[in-house]
Length: 530
Ligand SMILES: [Zn+2]
Image (cartoon, rainbow, N blue to C red):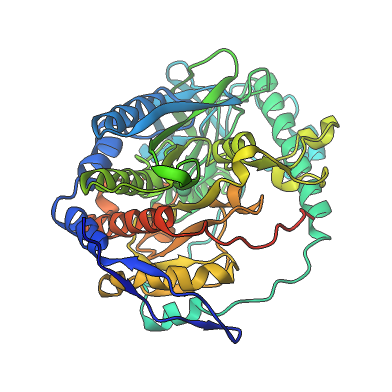
């Protein structure tokens, strides 16, 4: 097949000319045609959100998502389709209904949803509401012997803050220009001791409170949603680990229903609530979690080398995990489908990973990277082992696996569902002219910017942490951080289909070019963890 390659003008960086980066415009055209005119991204996205729904790590619906995505990959002719187990995540959990009603001094339904990994009420329960404020271990004693048969209102009221910014945001020239600025970081070494101490205190307090509330025989506990405007923003409570105290049924309530309850109790009124939560742990013992993996095998001498695309498939439990992150999963799956549909024959293997356990600390991707590419040695002392990897003391030099040298690059999507406006280079300056070249055929659909800065908090960090090139795209925020992120509004309705099509075209193009370029993606130096 005839290939028309154009050379994008060489860029000068630090006075050194960088080699011209080839862009296969014939392939980009075919990818754009398939992505823009033959898209299946909304079918994939809709199935994940509207048919399967929320996908809490290790829940039955996450298992359904693993099985369904495997079947799609097989239908599309991908190779090596399998679920990749990572050890001992914890137990599965699911809920099917939740209601809270005020019975006195007036009657009103109240909007609240349960925290994941907390128990159900086992049918409706009724009790008097009491205000409880526990900030440190010593506070527990104030309440001992007083909470039996009560519903607990945890914490204080929060003053309503009217928004001053628009609900939804797309980048413009000015905000994209702002992303080009790099802030030299302050020295952070001293931070860790403080963060470790705070983490341990939080864990200890949570365990003690869970045990205390259960011993007291309190019926349920209600805390305030972290966002206003009727939005229920809630993550986990209790514990996902078998053998740890899970406490009592616990719900997050919209601020506008929580605050009046605080005012009523402060005014000395007697408030009675009826609470009914159907929730259950779906396993007795801790279970592994599962990432779903598939490949388009490479051909020829670079076939053992690896280019990866990925997004996390697990979600929180109250919405349908639409922007976080069925959008990313649908886009990366669509990128693989497009590459098959256009007959791409990559030289390196292109592998897609749909991670699990991301919401609990990048657990699926981190474990995968450790088993396949590299890891710092596991700590031997129990206190260190109990910390999340990001808080542990350095344990020694990086231990590299065989595939560390075969790895080229990983591209992630997890900043909501907004279209790609460019890419964060994670301070890998040698990657920048390559990305500039690959983005050029997408300037007309708004993807123009290569920023030196880092972005964090999701699965590319698992690669970046061990010195492997891992990147995430710059995206339009839309209403991700005003309405959607970890809320019950994270649903199909907040998605723009054209944005997903645009993102899939760019993801497919980046994977293809990374799989075809002469060299693997340049690497930045591995920094020893501090
Ligand atoms: Zn996410």
